[in-house]
Amino acid sequence: MLKVAPSVPPPAWGNLGNVLKNQGKVEEAERAYRNALHYRMMSGFETLPSICRRGRQEVVRCTPRRGLLLQENNQLSEALHYYKLAIAAYLNTGIILMNQGHLDEAKRTFLTCADIPDENLKDPHAHRSSVTSCLYNLGKLLHEQGHQEPCLMLELLLFEVMKSSIIHDP
Image 1 (tube, rainbow, N blue to C red):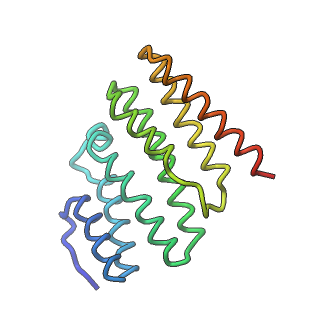
Image 2: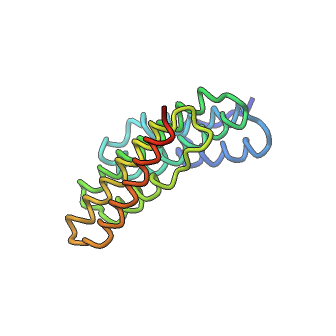
Image 3: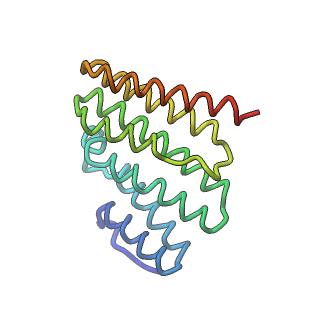
C-alpha cells in the first residue's frame, strides 16, 4: 500500500490517481481521487470562498476521473453516481462564476458541461436535463451581455437537446 503524507496538496492527489490508474492500480487510484476531493473540501486552513475559487477546478476534474476509473472496471452504478456529481459540479460552478462576475470562465464551464457525452449512461435523460440547464444559463449570460445572435443559436441547440429527450426517452 502506498503511503503519502496528508499535507500533499489536492492537485498532487489527482495526479497520483492518474499515475496509479495508468499502472493498473485501480483501488489505489480510486483512493487518490477520493483524497483529492476530500482534502480540497475539508482543508481547515482555507475559507469556503477560497475553496470555491481555487478548488472548483480540482473538484470538477477529479469527480469525472473517478467515474471513468469505475466505469473502466465495470462498476457502472458507482461510475454513474460520479458522472452525475461531475455534471452537477459543472452546472453549479458555472452559476457561481457567473454570480461572482467571472463571466468568461462561467461561459467556458457551461460549454464544457454541455459537451459531456451521454452515451453509455444509465440515465441519459438526467444528463440531458443538466446539459439543458447549462445551455440555458449560458444563454442567459449571453443575453445579459447583449449578445443576441449567439442566444438564438443556443435556443436552436436547446430545442434539439429537448427534442432528442422526447424522442429517445419512453
